[in-house]
Length: 171
Image 1 (cartoon, one colour):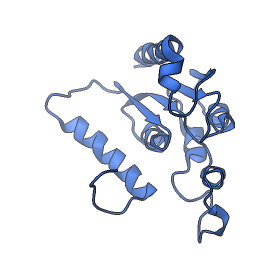
Image 2 (image 1 turned 180 degrees about the horizontal axis):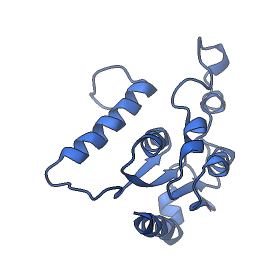
Image 3 (image 1 turned 60 degrees about the horizontal axis):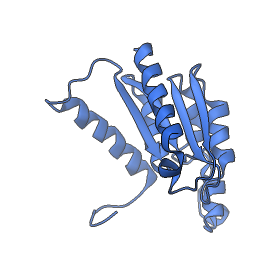
């Protein structure tokens, strides 16, 4: 976005997420107790959040809003010729579908019932395959991809608060 340099690729985005978490850990003003971080990812950012939740031991919880499990159907839905792109298959990053199956942290999956970009079936797939014992799927009725927080209102905030509470108990 904006005037950033470099090549926008999913592997670089995931690498940046790890770097950002490392910088956060090193900040003098941010001294966190073990496993006191909750990662939150929205839409494409769900890949970064799932990456961190799957790979970093000091993450206490995961929130995925409007996330996706499989990249190929998403690319096709967006009008990109995913099948025709060279060397692109589900083994390519971000592999949300594989990483979610390794996550045992308290997890919240929020998804707009009327999401125009990412079908709710993708979020349901993430929920169904997440290994967490403490997980919750919250569909937000009447919401679209870009207004889920506003439409969800108190239901949305309560779900996030409950995840924070649950994660805090698991530390």
